[in-house]
Image (cartoon, rainbow, N blue to C red):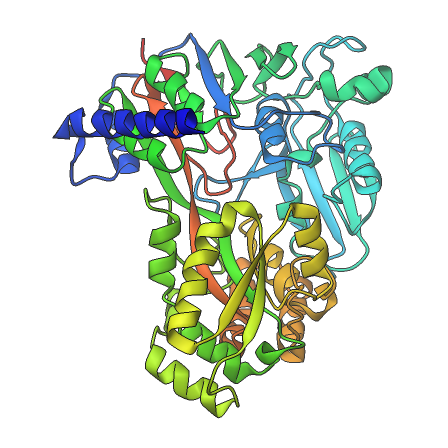
Length: 537
């Protein structure tokens, strides 16, 4: 035990010495992301050649679109296969990909896509790189609608081929969020011959129409990709990409600093500072489509009373929690149930978020019938203990509420919260920029009993607004207005405490040009949205 303690102390001392010895020249007025953009714009013309080495923080199990379950798997898939459309760089709107254009019927139940006629699959075991047609789109989307393990194309009834390069997608009921679903890597277009030829092994032999194709996959180690020479889009500058599996965050940073990686992903904690202080590296960090929140049970216990929820929120110093749980940065306080990078976000609504005022909070709790506080429990995963510990101390000090922390594994957490049996819980949510995937999943009455709305929040007026936002129009501005009306009501009901908006982050070598972190955590290397990463030789 003493030896382990000594080794840990020595490691901390080494980190401190590294940080103190690093040059102060990197402390400029520009943020890391701004500095990267400035460097890229000041550099020479893009150069072709080289293989980009990217670190993945988790190990892909399958690359089959209907079977994948993790973001880390989709990182590889997006470079190998394409969807009908993609988001633009700031995720504010859609950009054509395999589909050149699309239109929506007046009743919002039929989406018609006009496809490119110059798209070819990568050569595989069961086809030699043939042209993609509407039949491939029908096959791939119907396969997803029927068999997706994560239901990534729910609501799609059928896909009809209406021309050699045109398809019509029919939905069971109007859903303006369908276009967002179609950007998911689970809905990439694949050739039927390869899927059926490989059978259960297709997940290890993904073939698509993307900028790169798989040349070698050493399980648990790395995935090697080479440029697809008949790629329909802008020619990738890179000869290839190698995704290296490095699950330990410290090893990821060490590999980046030693030159064994060009891009390190999911950089957190003290590793952020190590990268900032390294003259050969850049830290890119931007607010992501990811929230951390503290749910309060809206159905039973003291927190079923809106006054109690209001008091608890007013007694919570959110800024202190966010800084304490993210000592090295990587998150900022959030104000509502929608991340800032969503197109439905409105800064005007931030003023409705309860302000920290423990004195008034105590009065409010007394009015609700709890002048001496009460005892309760909060469920959370091990990774969120720092959030829970600070909140626990604040509740005791400011409201005399005794909060017992229940640190449990994921299965117990999700089951307890989904069934509405957690008096309080700390959770997180990450999804598309379309507000539907945050607000409907987390606040609609229909979702009570699911993990997102385990708190049991229900407001008929909110339900109506959320339903109208997907059934009345596909116009983004009109939908945003409806979501903002719903948010205003939600914030006044105080169903939960908003904690932080997490950042997407990466460390990159200064030889890497044109790479930016995306708010949806996707790794974009050569993308129809204009991204085309290159290496400065």
